[in-house]
Image (tube, rainbow, N blue to C red; front, top):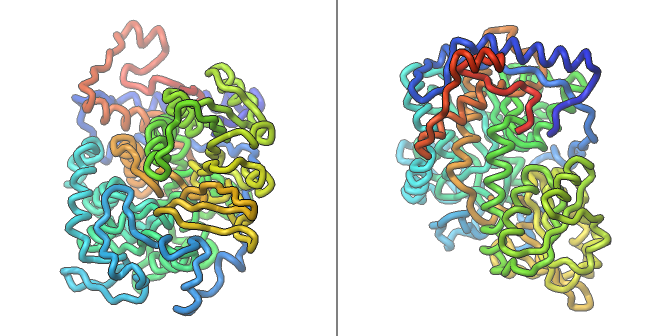
Length: 546
């Protein structure tokens, strides 16, 4: 999301705020030799409020559809998010150890107990916990910075008393984050933000150690909202913090449990979709708690969105379709950080890449990077692959899908499943044929086949893996944001959406430099004075674009 523009007076105010932040942080350093306790971090990392830009409104799902009463067991067999029995096959994004003998039984119909006698969870198979623990241990090997933060703060328990409800992808990497929050003193209840990205064995491993997890791979629409409700609505347990990815948990609590929502001390949101929804609530004067916008932090935008997608787009397409990219004509819809990462990877393997964009600045960047910027309708009949990366809705419509050539691949790399008009494909004249997990052939009456991946949901986390190291950067940012919001003195944050301060971004980056044996150059006193900087940062103003 680009920085808000406005009057010169407003810009001057923002620069002044940045200077104040830099002055406030003058006592801190982010070099690897510096030790900072969590009290210092909490007092230093006061977030900077963002000016809410004017954005195209993203409408919430109709209340009657989203918050309908839960169906009967028979009723929930009809899956609106999956179209065949094999939609619920539990192929983990890495390895999966699901016992196929109970694939047909909904976890909601099972009675499971972990080794401690607790049944406060709902996962595919609690017996997979041992395998999930191995997955988590593998992830920990490439998340040393997050583990270093855990070790440094564990004795102080900065999250003691925090009761966190989370709605994220449940993978081995997010499990390391959840276990870090627990180690820092928090109680956690968790659910999945995507019905296809959950690693069942990881969900089992978390449930085994006492984290109340309600998620499994291949949930239905009804299962999805049921899991969120079970996560929030637990007798005798009042959540006071939210960690969200997409805004579904936040919106559910706001609509269904307003009294619970009012007692929340802070929200940490990491996706563009969720941030849009928070800005909508704030603009309408309905956001009654402070929120941290992690999505627009530098460490999220430039690393998770760009570098993660640069590697995982190819992985997802290869695993699902075995496609060769050399010479293929590909349209990438959107040239933000996600789109840039996808295009760089595809171009490197010899694909002919076209870009669609609404933003002239991003379009000009695409042109300067050697890509042709087109309207989708201009190339729809000739392209082999369409990848959406916009966060918008109906980017690829039924009319455009009708005109695609036989064998074309359609997939989404944005958070929301609204970018491809999948609902328009569920009509009597079209036949759906499941080829393999997360791969469907949609067959037209004339025999034409279009390959749809993950039913229009997030490709990389639904169909493959994502680089653990990059997720460590985002997870560390989320953990620090959670610590800051929970420990902030009353009045520091108002009922608004805040950007993470530059100092926190720099601190997160510094924690990860040791992995590469990187050594920062230090400014001399003379150089620092010449540039008007503190020797220890922040080194860039808030308006700087990396």
